[in-house]
Image 1 (tube, rainbow, N blue to C red):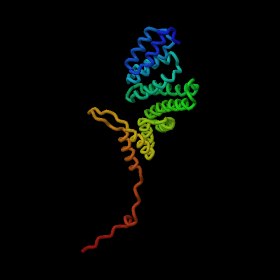
Image 2 (cartoon, rainbow, N blue to C red; image 1 turned 180 degrees about the horizontal axis):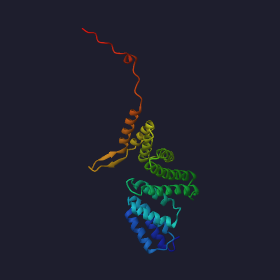
Image 3 (tube, one colour; image 1 turned 180 degrees about the vertical axis):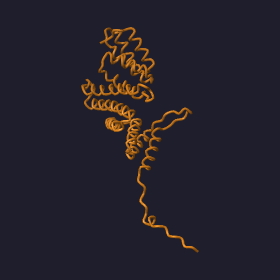
Length: 251
């Protein structure tokens, strides 16, 4: 691992840093000072995580791929790359299908790596089981989003349901996306139920160009409710309504 106390101290310093801008600077200093370090994989991984915090998609891809060049089974890099690609890919882009395929490959490799991992020393069986479940939930959430973007709503439902079942506390975004999948499959009652859970968690708000915000969950609930009402058969006529109207008598 570290070849000197100075290298070890520099490694510990960037690993402890909580500010992503500072952490990136420390990682870059470390890599310049110790270009042949055996800790290079962990330095690249730390930079990947820091750039994820900064929402710097391009550098997430760069450092994530550098991490995998050091170790193709680095689980953290695999899942961060899978998540970043699925979240940032736009269907209007010419290569969107190829990028989603790449994101899916990273997510599935992550699940494979996780299935082969052993419990780390110092972690109880219960802690390890919880960690595995949360990690699996993240991978299935990515696969669900990729399926949703491909308009494979059956697969999206299955992946999102698995993610919700595995997560200790499913967040509003995950529940919202499951609700969308149900709506597209015309399972409106299930959609409304899960969207209500997302609403209770605060919904999913995005900024508008006017400086306000929209709640995507509220919009999805409105859509599902209207679609449900439109799909319901009309109520049967009462016997009185079904009778022929009486002919008016001339005065």
